[in-house]
Image 1 (tube, rainbow, N blue to C red):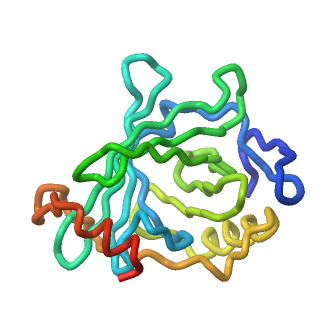
Image 2 (tube, rainbow, N blue to C red; image 1 turned 180 degrees about the vertical axis):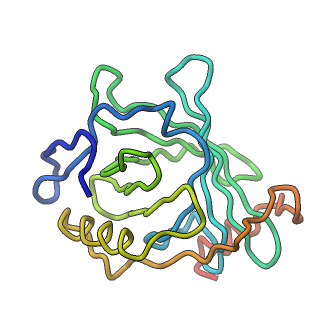
Amino acid sequence: MEAEGDKKQQKSGGGEMTVVRGLDVPRYMGRWYEIASFPSFFEPRDGRNTRATYALQEDGATVHVLNETWSKGKRDYIEGTAYKADPGSDEAKLKVKFYLPPFLPIIPVVGDYWVLYVDDDYHVALVGEPRRKSLFILCRKTSIDEEVYSQLVERAKEEGYDVSKLRRTPQDDPPPESDAAPTDTKGGWWFKSLFGK
């Protein structure tokens, strides 16, 4: 697998990291299914069908982010925005901003979203961040070819990630519709996730 527009990027905390340059942002928009990730307190521990949907806003610079997951038959979600960390750079380094807790959005939480790899067809992607504390393997479909998955895991390992932390995300096929299940509007999932329930 050859990455599109790779660049070696020096980062704090250990060595060089490959970051995509010249990301075609409009092509990157749309729905991505989470094939595997490092566990995060943003997601329920028993979450499944986790996915992200990106939509470029009218300003051409801001991306609307919708992260969804299903837990105990209910749809949990959080919305936010993403934007380039350095508008003058062609590096695929984004900042993602969410407001927490979701039922009373008052605390802004900003994270890094670095596209480490995307294939030429924009069908699979590897996403991380400078501290190597989060990692996502994404695909346009709910499943991924095992050989491709293994190559992405190996690529992450080469970038210094502890791939033993990766957890496969259960995905149903076909995926659930957003309005086909009750939605947790009280944010209980967030508290449960935060406290490791």
